[in-house]
Image 1 (spheres, rainbow, N blue to C red):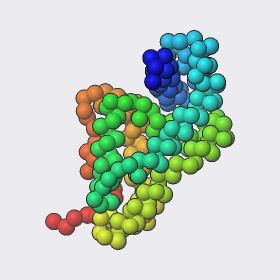
Image 2: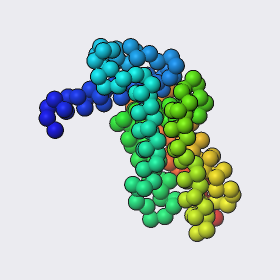
Image 3: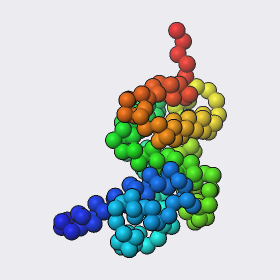
Image 4: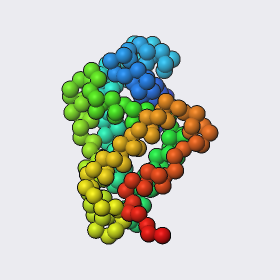
Length: 199
């Protein structure tokens, strides 16, 4: 890759990162293309060389989020189903400290669930990420071997992911918790799923 190509890729990533933060904090409708350009310290004209519109930028951002949600289970190696959820949480909290965009993506995915003036074709893309159903399959398989508590696998998955969603959205509002390493214990969230151990 040439220096010029590297610079172009760096600018594109900068736009992406600033857009994620602004969309998360202000919402899609209240974020203007000029706001993103200003945050990225470039002209609107230059930004249009990378993304032709706010809608296209947001669409790509949502595609990125959906792809990440779909690929994460496949990329993780785990010995048992419970290790998958624990490993995911540890990875999530670790990366959130270094890449706040992860927290902002959770905020944006929450906005997508509520609609909030977002174009219908982008909402349709977002519906392609069904983390709850994917996890319900893992939970159902794990219940047969005693890893998870009894109960409807979908509802257990729903409860777990709703809790994760809430934690990540609150961390986006309170980044000082990450800076001071004041995070929930992964065991607290895993406790939603895991079978209670007899003393």
